[in-house]
Image (tube, one colour):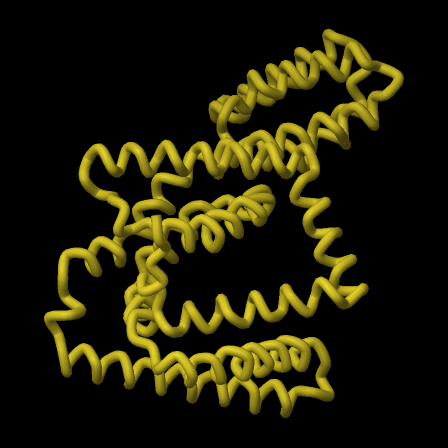
Length: 292
């Protein structure tokens, strides 16, 4: 079965080419090679690998369900793979932010429904010739890198301003180029396949939320339980009872669990017996119910 490279835009082809070039030279550079090996070791760590495998299995399940209701088919494979290695992977790696922000998941959903998502699709839909894109990709990468580095130091504020100005100009140029092409040939853009490709990422992200929520919940419980084991290392029976009562009190409510985690360690220091623990959690339930 032959591989059809035409499914990739010129910009995507340029990115792939530069990635392969970087990978090729990186293999022969000791420092880069060691860094790449470090990343691979991290990915293949038992805990991280189990999360990635669970994520992939969950996404495959979503795709099978979407396929059965005719939302997804093989023509969306490229967009799906990009979403998995882009949005899905980044979201699962940053899910710890959910413990610090009660509205984390709401913000993700809102971000995926903003008009900027449509604008990004339009900009990426139209690309320049392959050779122009091959030049633009490393140049823009260097400009973005310089901007990120310059942003960290006040003395480089002018450099940061210049780099951001260049990125803004290029972004505007892409938008103008894309809009011009839409008006030039509206029918090639406004077709069923493109509309499905536009709505696919928000749909996938929305269906992905339960997995992220469950993963964030497990991480929060694990963090609390590890802290309890450390602070109550000499009272394992009490630590076990507090864990059970914590699960009963918070259940699958991540917001409640995160709030509880901020006070649990200072509070449990004063809990010296089973009776004190049960009283503490009984009072906690009353507060949650608005009785106290």
